[in-house]
Length: 117
Image (cartoon, rainbow, N blue to C red; front, side, top):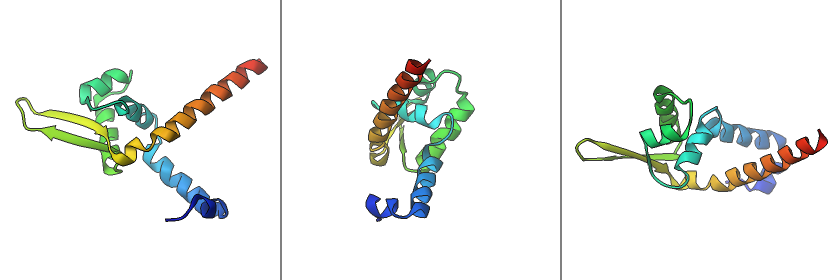
């Protein structure tokens, strides 16, 4: 695997890795879904409740994509009725640092924009 130093010295590789990351987490709903399961296992309806305005169809689609990309793990329990829970994979848990940095940046950016107005 390339080191971040090697990647930064090659603008083409840098942009490719940014695109790879964005392909996994981009869209209106993926980060809110990740944020919803960040603090523990959730059932479908719990995730839906945490994200206003997401439709069941869109939530289902996005969960499948996140599972396909190895960010979310779907666990089906053999019970009556069947119980399905979603949680972050190990890879998904590592995105916490990215989210924390995004939140820090957002706070700083919002503060500076409002300070100018």
